[in-house]
Length: 277
Ligand code: F3S
Image 1 (cartoon, rainbow, N blue to C red):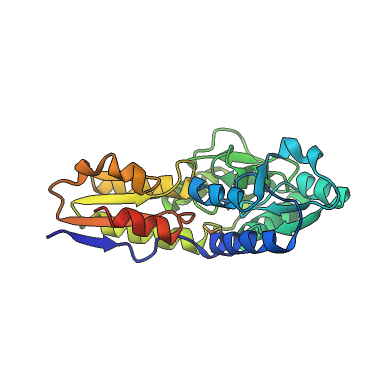
Image 2: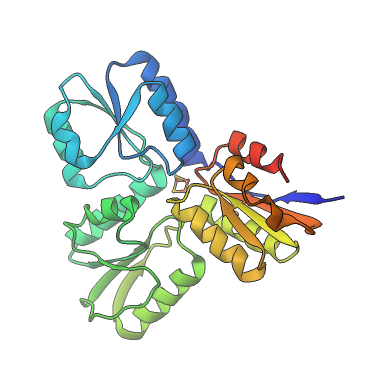
C-alpha cells in the first residue's frame, strides 16, 4: 500500500491566490481586459483566463491598448516606466503586484535615491527582477547565486527576489561583507517561499520518491525541484496530471511518495495529479 505525503506548505500562496481570484472577478465587471504578461506561471490557469475573455499582452504591445481598456498588473510587478506609461495612457489599471514585491520596489527606489548601489539576488531575466530593477533606473547589480564579481560602490543596498533560496542569500551577504564597508540588507525572500522550500526539503529526506507539481517557467517550482532532488534521487517535476501519466512508471516500487507544488499551482491540478499516484 502506497503512502502519499503532502508537504505541510504547498500550492497557491496568498499573492497568487488573490491575483487569480481578482482576475476572474474583474472580467465580469469590465470591458476589454488584458494581463501584462501571463498572470501566473501556470498554463492551465492562463488558458482558463483566456477562455473567460482576459487576454495576455506583452509590454511591447502596450501601444495597442485603448483608453477604456483594463490592464491587470500581475504579482511580479512592473518597472516604474511601464507603470507611469500605463497611467499616462489613462487605461484602467488593476494592480495585483504582490505586496511583498511592492515592498522591495519601494526599498530599492528609496535607497537608490539615497545614493546606494542596489544589488539584487535573483534571475535577471525573471519579470519580478526586471520590474524591481526598473525602480532604480535599471542600475542594479544582479547576481543569480550570490557570487559578486565586480567592485561595488561604497554604499550598498541588498535585496532578494522573493523566491530565492536562503543559502544563496547567505552566500551573497557573506561576499558583500568581505568587501563592503557599509551595506544594508533586506531579506526579501517571502514567507510563503521559505515555508514551501523548508517543508519540501524536509519531506524529501523521508520518502522514496518526490513529485513536484508546477509550471515549467515557474521559478519557485524549479527551486522546489532542485532542493528535493538534492535529497531524493527519484524527484520528478510535472506541470499537471497529463504529464504525470506519461511518466508514472518512475514511481514504481516507491512506497512513500512526497508531494509538493509551486506557489502558482492551483489545488485542482494538485488533486488531479495526486489521484494518479
Ligand atoms: Fe507574493 Fe510570495 Fe506569492 S512574493 S506572490 S506571496 S511567493
